[in-house]
Image (cartoon, rainbow, N blue to C red; front, side, top):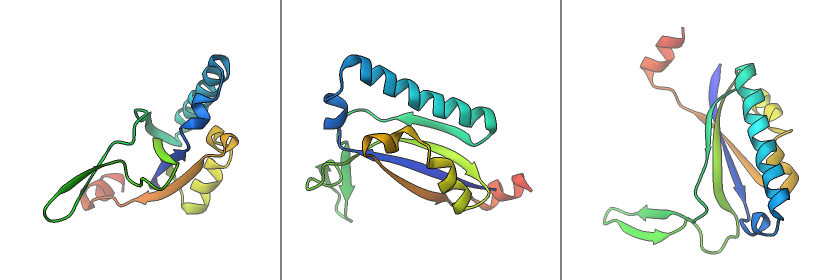
Length: 122
């Protein structure tokens, strides 16, 4: 089994256009997906990120800027950490994520385990 980080990107204006009721209903769908995943052993954790672009630090002589990409509308809004047999299984597990219903983007990346972590799992 491998671990994957599920990165949730979306245009934050989508959430601001929702009524309070729609927003609450959507949040409940995200929580339900996470709870079902935890119960099945798929989801190891996750968190919603604050509604701001954050900071980016680049270079050998660090330069700090606002947000990752000023030319894009999408922001990283949250993540889940999941465990799956392989990339195909991880993709299948994410296809019904409620994030997709709102025009969001999911980036799925395998987490490279340290040698100690890998040995503990054997």
